Image 1 (spheres, rainbow, N blue to C red):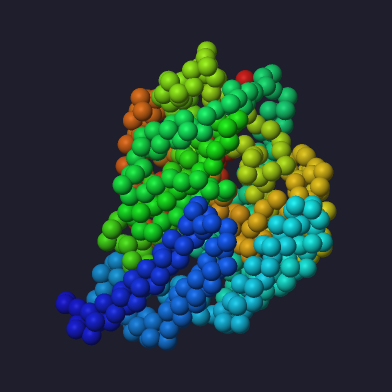
Image 2: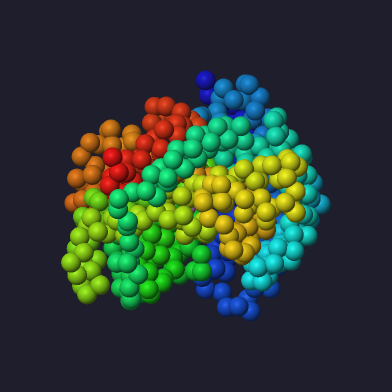
Length: 508
Ligand code: CO
């Protein structure tokens, strides 16, 4: 059957509309990258109006009635039969984006933008002063608006599902509660064992003077080894490391340097490098179609965590990397063995700050936030309850009590930015990564020997084939099941953590 003339025209028109929306979004991303890396301080006001104008145009394009007409025509069963699988997928994902956007009244979008701009401002002050009341009124307003947003989008079970779905399509609160409670119980048990372990680990090797210029040189060497294409990307410096893509042939990452801690820049670089390999691995034919994006934030995070933690904190990695690093820092690393590096970069400590947490306790920080935020959006918990609830849960989950709110409930910017539903994607990333790694080891039995020899290509090839090349063609659940042969299963992360840390801490 050949595609009828009108359907050919319709899908071409849809693709043109989408291509322009993608162009506009990526242009906004360039401005955002510049703001974090290059822009002088006085540029902020003009940048804010430029971004507001650009996002207004994007919103207009994404809610245009013509886009709705095209989608409706192309969704008719006769039209669907004639479309290629890629074109069907374009119609599916653009419908999703179109519905999410058109369901929100323009007034709500404006109010949210205003409330979160104010919220980020007052949150900064509140954290500096460690004074919750400075932020609480703005957060109350943001939560109210987010509840309204969830109601507009619609949900079956709990309001939080509507917000979660934006970052992790298909995920539900009920599913995460069950995954996370299994993970939490196992993690708390493992931490108890580590407390009583016969061995202590030390980070002392990492906490020495390390020249940032040489750190940068080493980071680039590792990025090249991973397969990062410097002709299709670059690395710069920013206060908070991030990755942004202007298309698969221009992917930007950032890092930050601490001249007295080797771990900061190195692991930020490997983490963002993992994100970047995903973005560089999107096929060119999916670019500018709406499919040239990640399947979800959780899947994106699985790529960064797999490289950062599972590979970058392993013995095979340090067997390869230590001699290269020692050439740059012969004094600091005199007499250090690969095993010594592995111990230093994997020390477990019950601590207050999420972004500084180790691989074992990290998920507890996330589960705490998830347990608070789904109840907050659902109205079971109020903004005024947060500081005491936070401290009580930190004691219960992580085993530490914040001495003040700056080191507690005020530490992250996500809620001030209105990003409810974002936190769980970090732990989903860890869960996906462990399951992908299990499958990689099964299919490439020699993978650890390859890594120890500095051969990282087979891992990248596997990830390109199973994850990167699909862009947004598949849902996260489909992607994981297709890549590993089974649905997401927390047993893989639990098994990985137990095996690794029992060995490191000399536990049976
Ligand atoms: Co990340």
